[in-house]
Image 1 (cartoon, rainbow, N blue to C red):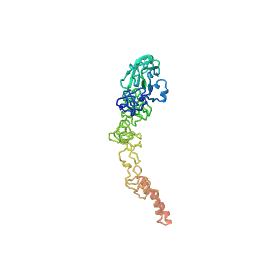
Image 2 (spheres, helix red, strand yellow):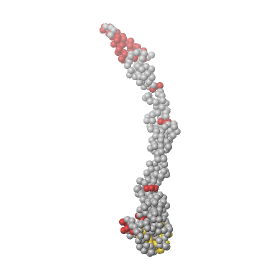
Image 3 (tube, one colour):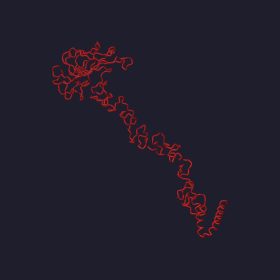
Image 4 (cartoon, rainbow, N blue to C red):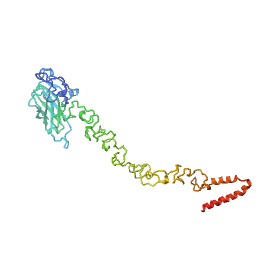
Length: 425
């Protein structure tokens, strides 16, 4: 009820009631008046009292118009017994068996200033209960106080706390809080630990930019909602904003990959996009294998295993050679049959019948040498039609027309006889 804002007072330059008139009201200088500190002596006359210029009212419009108890906070309640009967009404879902706090002790907590009535009691749903105070005796002292709430009072989902102060002339409330614990403020920022969004780190402004319920000063991702504050790699950067949520080094080797995807976060040459280096004993590409590359052509061999062309499934160690000028068995050599020793662009297995003579190959010009087969047709040049025709023409040109009739049949017969003898030798 109300809010823990130090009575809405900006304590800068304000002093407490004391004979020196110089002691600060905000003892620790953290910008908020909290339990253990003091209401200001506004006119610095040495006391906080009614009729001495120490009145103040810093209620917000909402607080001033409230009827459940916030209207009693953040201002000086002046007049003998003026605060007697002040009521704070707390409403909540009716407790059910199985609720996390069902049956647990509950407490009404107050932070108020200059409460001098002793004993200090309150009425909780008709039962008079004494408040336990933090301390008393100094003028204007701000105190934290608590009292146990009887469990039966909780069972209807409503608790009414009424102040009993018939003779109190000057009293100010900062806030009232119904909670399962006594008022505690471990970080000393004036915000009760049970409602402090950073209970271990002072943060008076309670700033929570991402609205996840965790204050910015202790939020591992202040700009990204992460109420569970999960930090898998314990690097104080929450998983939701950590570029490497499982790598405390945050890609220390700057290879663009984080552990555990990067199997060696200290080596920039090792990552899932790296090319496997054969025979170095390292899993360079983080695929779980060492010195093994993908078998791109599916022939059962990869480059590290000796496949000299991993895009050709017919090429791998032990493959059969083919007459195509390719080293299919990856031994670094071509067979003698595939060699082109004379540089005529034809191999033995490609039809070159004399790989020592660049003028002899399939389709080569025929020189009509009876001892050669220039075009590798399997027939010696002297029996090639082109050569037979040439000889006939030469024979006819050396006689007269009358002798042609005599000699031509004879020449043809002898030529045919020679051909037959070659064939049946």
